[in-house]
Picture 1 (cartoon, rainbow, N blue to C red):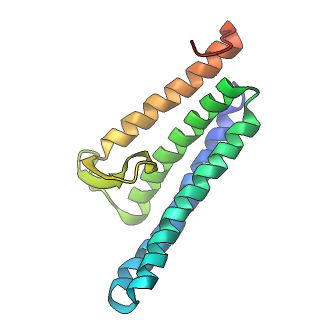
Picture 2 (picture 1 turned 30 degrees about the vertical axis):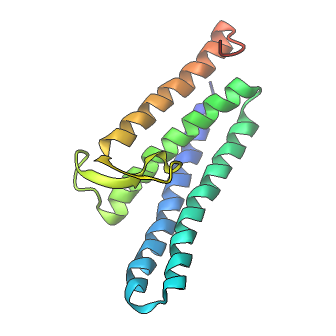
Length: 152
């Protein structure tokens, strides 16, 4: 249970660093629409998506290191991913001032895994991430305090 605070800090830092990279490349992409050839625009968009994938892999590695068994690794991954996602959205609001409110319908990749744009209030991924934090903490709690060894 002592690992949640440092893992939460790492997840927040990851969200902050990713949004800096994404914001920079997003600005380059907006500028590039008029001046760069289409191949360069594709390179910029690919760089933005690659950043998310790299962060995703780093989160998985941290969860593997933090956990003692599969269930703990899964719980830590869920927890770190959820904190990172919330941090990403908060930093996106700070740097880009988007969306205007939590109820604004916004196009985004749901949980950054499914490569389909979803149009829904930005509040939806924040609710999902909050639920994931609860699930991750609960799994660790029940394993460490109640002796849960596997999911049945």
